[in-house]
Amino acid sequence: MVRLNSSDKVEFDCVGFGMNAVDYLSILDPYPDLDEKVEVVESSVQGGGPVPTAMVTLAKLGSKVAYIGKIGNDPEGEFVKTDLEKQGVNTDYVIIDKKSKTSRAFIWVDKDSGKRTVALDKTKSSHTNISEFKSLDSISTSFLHIDAREPEVSIFLTNLAKKLGAKVSLDVGSLRFGVESVFPFVNHLIVSKRFACGFTKLSDPISACKELMKKGFETVVVTTGEDGCICGSPRGFTSSGSTKDFGTGRKEEEVFHVPSFPVKVVDTTGAGDVFHGAFIYGLLEKWDLKKIARFACATAAMKCRKLGGRAGIPNLAEVTDFIRNFK
Image 1: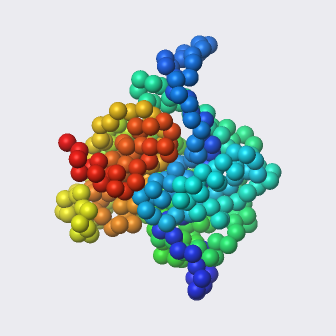
Image 2 (image 1 turned 180 degrees about the vertical axis):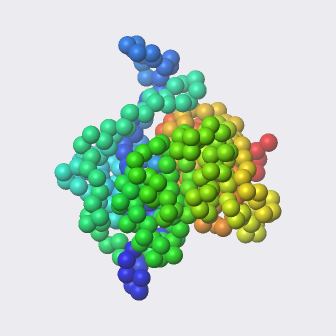
Image 3 (image 1 turned 45 degrees about the vertical axis):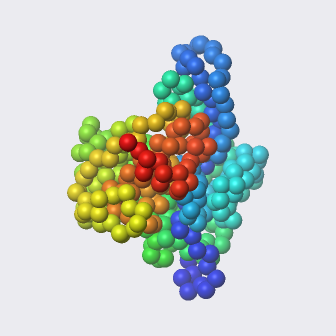
């Protein structure tokens, strides 16, 4: 993403950089207390990580995407890479580090609620060095999606993206050091209620959204789980007039709530990540903000009907039918 005058660039709708992992998932019934033993109801091994899962979502919806994070030279790393490729995500620019171990996430899901506990093992995973990136000068993209776990690298990539005229979206689920240093380079902030309220020290997600909007983002989205999301835009969004429009076509209010879609929840793992991918898809399509948020909520809800962050991700036709038939 450096030589702007290159004539042989590979064009993507979105490029993602962030943590990846192999998810080891188990549904438990009942969910155990400390020092208890239970049997697994169902299990699965899937690729994970917020940004990679968002890229898989975009690929399922029909976008051309690439992932450029780091993996270890180990079986888990090969699994991450192969799984992304199977899902339609370009991995030509993935960094393979022989001295690093690919992260693993151990996820226990409560059968009754679908809520989960995640234990992330990054003990032998190394940070990314800017010098490790390869052939970024051959990439052109409309969007860069990051998680800011590595702020210095994220800022480096956002600067390259800006030179291409690309927009930057940021996914933050939990409070972490250095994330605010990335804010000035971000157009679209999509965060969890936990982060929004923790960062602003406000208990109400609507108030937190308004406070975050003061940072100058084009849009701020606060995901609130089963309650849907809160969206805000200082400038408002208008409909593109697409025939697939699910929105109102009106100029949006500054801050508004979009409810979730009720489904039979099996597992909430990755719901936020899928929301992010679907939200970026709507931005790429230039839909109005309310339509984008409704589309993202529907896509995330559909994912929750299956175990794991990726097994239940729908394609565009499935989401369209789901919204059209929703009562």
